[in-house]
Amino acid sequence: MTDILLITFAMTLLYIGIANRLTTYIRILVFQGFLLFGVTFLALSQINVANLVFILLETIIFKALAVPIFLNYVIKKNGITRVAEPFIPNFITLIIITLILVITIILSNSIHDTNLDKTFFIVALSTLFTGLYIISTRRKIITHVMGYLVIENGVFILSLAVGNEMPMLVNLGIMLDIFASVFILGVFFNKIGDVLKDPDVNQLRNLKD
Image 1: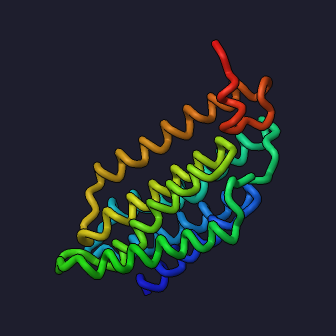
Image 2: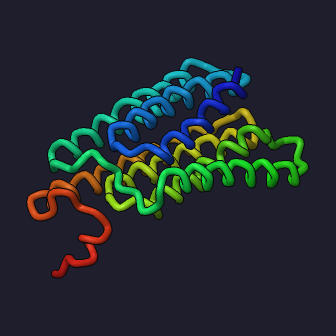
């Protein structure tokens, strides 16, 4: 069952790579949050009430609800157009993300470690590289935030790749890091929203003190 959830997660990477609307990005992040809860819940060999509550807060409450709602609020408040505006055509993006998946599979097969779960490792690395690809090939700053969240999901999965024990403090640090990043960028959008109604990377190059 865990492998099915991980494969489904990998398929969302292909979908987010070819998505054209920001609302689709947000929905995928919501879906990934629920998938991460299912994967983590099944992956932990021993789970107590405290771990279950923390997993619920981090994956469903934070990843699947709080952050997407906040991003949707930022989009509406600043009147950002709903088109992602990628630099590269969707067909090329689909090929590149597929190649990322294939390369990570080949890389994982070259690693011989009994403590490493290769399925987690493949999906984690693919998620990391896909997030970086989204950041580097999208015009809008808001999509860069979403790419960063995809990268963080990859880090989350990578923490499960080396075993089924997930340190609570490490995950708490990751969650606080995301919250701070999204909050700061949200303030950033609120401050420049009146000047740049649809801020992208090219427009930021023209900003002066």
